[in-house]
View 1 (cartoon, one colour):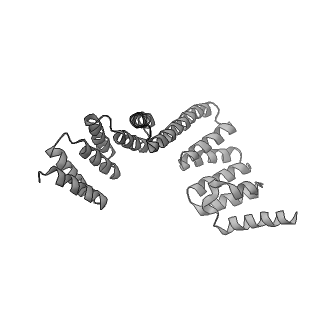
View 2 (tube, rainbow, N blue to C red; view 1 turned 90 degrees about the vertical axis):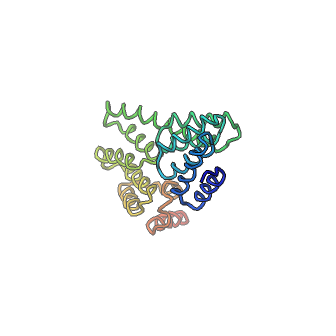
View 3 (tube, rainbow, N blue to C red; view 1 turned 45 degrees about the horizontal axis):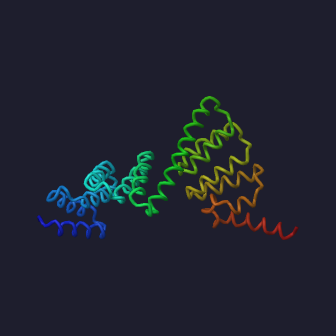
Length: 239
């Protein structure tokens, strides 16, 4: 029971087999035997993060860093956990640290770029939401907020702003189209097709955009979409 290597190996085996509770037990044993074993804290933090125990995951990863402050992987992993919790500024700090330690850490650099872009979106949203409170019926502001929320994957919030637009401008075909796009990104095919049909009924006629728009990727296999594209191709061949 007090063999560090045996406990560490067993913990690693249980991780590989997907038995996270047993892995936690053995990595905890390693730490009990040797409180200075940085890699055990790191592995325990990763396992706890996979189980959704974010606070304890961060605590163990931070302990690993205190013991081994030049470990790029620990900075990267803390950054990933913090990003999952929306703590973007702290995540950016740790991604930068990881890259400072290992300039060739491409994955950390990729996530750093993603975190910076995410922060820019959040800052833009914060600015526009303040503007929208002063001018609640500004169409451009509402549309931009809807698109920004959609781009960060907050589809319900995006739909909230698009529905506000429908209340104010019920005949705007673009709004119906954008609602269809959001539902398609949510992979709700029935709603996406329903709103795309409404957009066309309201006069949305940019069939080329419909055909190529990546936001509609999830409904390309529906009969409605296929018929729409065929109709466009048939009209094109007649001209």
